[in-house]
Length: 397
Image (cartoon, rainbow, N blue to C red; front, side, top):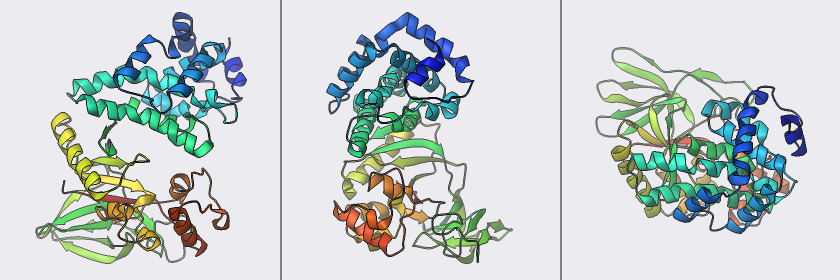
């Protein structure tokens, strides 16, 4: 079966010719292993060993039974496995292989069968780092968790739009430690952080165009260039000089820090632990603090070569305007309290995705009001305001 026949039967009409170079390896895997990719014995062993998919197993089994009878789907799954096996290949081609929705649950979910093929690789790596069974089990929990996220958004279990996210686990860059997922990465914020001799922290904007509002130019509602300026840090023998970030997470006026009292502790490119926030789990302060503390211990012990400088988060949950939207004494805003906030270029899509479960911008008047959070955010948008995907960092853990 030719690649164009396989993909066309699954609703993918256009694809780059480079996939033709990858497909022979996938076809060979199909010829050698047949329907083994659809919940073969080895995969069922991992599911049992790490208590995977308890919320979606019936749907996954139904999808596997369907896939076993569909040659095009099986060939597609082996192609997906080949693409996801290499980080750079996945960057180029994975999104092009997302199946269109509307074909049915089995099509929406089948990609999880390909992801499951990487369980041995992930397990081998985590065991080689000496990580306990609970950490491995919790890390694998993300596979099923994203299928549940899909179900909450679209009404049926699926995984397709989250394949890119799960690629990070295949790339061995993320593990779950208690409440949060922690990703080893380079800091990408347009700020530098400084620590005073007394232990205070201050952020300065670095090499970025700033809107007159203090947001990053080009963010939603901040596209006009009038009054914008380039914020860049300069230094001499005595001073760091730049535009400070205020408590509201926005760029403020120019300031100088004396080098005798302040030292740089973070800049773009430095190693950080990026915090990701799985849904449906508590944000109670003690739960969050325990996860941060445990993660710091885990990475310092089991990944000693990754000398992270800070923990960071980029999310709509980093926007300080949430204090006005939902109040200061909520678990969400107390989660926000831990971080030193700073602006990031934002299209305002995060709150649409995670609060309204929508992939597109919703006009304020059409925003649903099914929860108190939705009602509060809607009122904020009806007033002509936005929730931005901002950044946050903290150091002492």
